[in-house]
Amino acid sequence: MTAAASIQTDLKVTPLTNLTSAELIQRALERGEGVLDKNGALVVETGKRTGRSPNDRFIVKEPSSENEIDWGKVNKPFDADKFLSLIHI
Image (cartoon, rainbow, N blue to C red; front, side):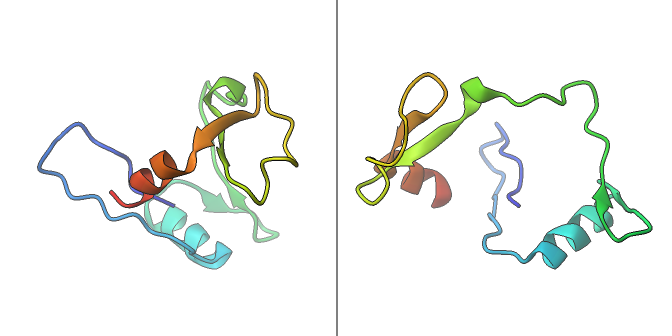
């Protein structure tokens, strides 16, 4: 889970990486983003926009997988250097 980006230039954002499922669920509960079902599943309301956004999907194109992916309109390649710059904000 990562913090939402902001246009405020003085805002410091610390991305959270490699959290376990339990940690992600706990954070969602603490932030009031969902509730636990009686079977223990996290339940959230997504609002009006619940569909996938295939036009907003990008896959990092790198040597170990670039020949395994059907590149095209849905599977858009994303440059590895650009991806690394995003996760090191």
